[in-house]
Amino acid sequence: SGGHLLMHRPRVRVPSRRLCPEIVGLNYPAVMDGTPHGNPGPSRGVGRPDGRPDAAGGPPRFTGNAGDARKGRGRRGKAKPPSNPGQVPKPLENAGAAVGDVGDDEEDGEVYEEDGFTADLPEVAVVHPPGTTHITGTCVLMCPPSERDFRSRKNDIELFERPVGGERNASDETLAVKKYTRIVDNVTPDMVRTKPALAMTASYLYGLLDQRAEVHFMIKSKFLWDRLRSVRQDLSLQAITDGFAEGLLEQMVRFAVLSEHELCEEAATVNNPDGHNSHLNVEQLAKTLTSLRHMYDDRAARGIGTERPHAEAEMFSFQLLLRIDSHGRYNVNRSEMLNDLRSARPAVLLSHSVQLALAANRAYHANNIFEFFRVVQQSSFLQACVLHKYFAKIRGRALEMINATYGKQAMPLVEVARLLHCSAEEAEALAAH
Image (cartoon, rainbow, N blue to C red):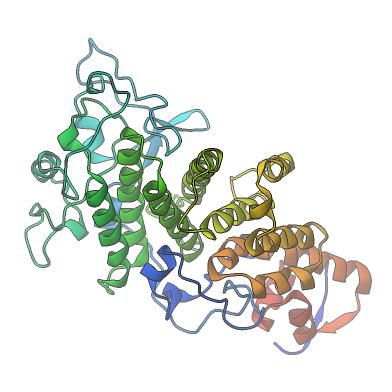
């Protein structure tokens, strides 16, 4: 520590660090609404989005059996047979596809299956009013009463849906939130929420992030991940693709980015099956960004303006940042970014957010660690959350170049930390690998 370190050519494998525990001092609803917030501090460290080392303390890591968090947790496996063997369930196909998928999620040829309510749903065809291709919701609550009663009987009321200190299966219309279901069958208008109900649901869900401080962010994130997916499903069933839908999806993108960073150390493993599934989160994030892109393009083709002129550029920058390089199980083809850029409108391409994303891409692929972290320092908080995925890789490449340049010469640890834009502790860990 602080002495000299003999630099060997390492096999770099440094675990990601949380940018800042529980996003100290950050207003969650403001982040969801896209309120401008700068990227605090200089570019240093592994942990924070601005590159600064983690703050001391913070909440305990989420491990072990999550209890209520386990409800609604997706598991991969074979799809369950239909309750009525004579009829094969068919997911709704391409209805409101611009908003998001309504049917199955497939991952490496396996079906992603939800716990609880999904398996017991009746499986018949979707009902549409005559002469229409989509349904118009009439439910004005966050959860249809029929679903709330059904889940109460099935012991499927989650932590945030119960009154504090109340019974385990007790809930009411002010707490229960409609759950995502993989198969959309037998849908009637009273099961689909209206626009005001969807807006109320989203506002209520994001408000939970600033409540119940004793509940770990992991549990909150899992609950919101499922319930926001249900909101997208209701938008899709009603083929809502206007500015209202854009606003909701933009909030969901920001939350997904925030969760991906905040839970970067809480990955699901054999020993911690209730951990964060980064692959599914990024997959849904990418789908939501694609849906938004279709909405923006459709609005522009019809000559319709927007009340959020900077939101489209912000969303496009997230899409570009996610495609800088492969991360985790999310594989990236370099041609994908080129295709995105070819189809983007000039006003979006010339925006500050998109130009910053392109600068980060250039610096990363040029192995220019100084320029990369200069871009990180200039980025917004959420942009830095995405860029954080590449911190370990670019530091590993920089360390290899240092090894190639200095060979076996000793170098002060503080100098290594300065070159890698991290703390001395992180530089020591990186070099040790």
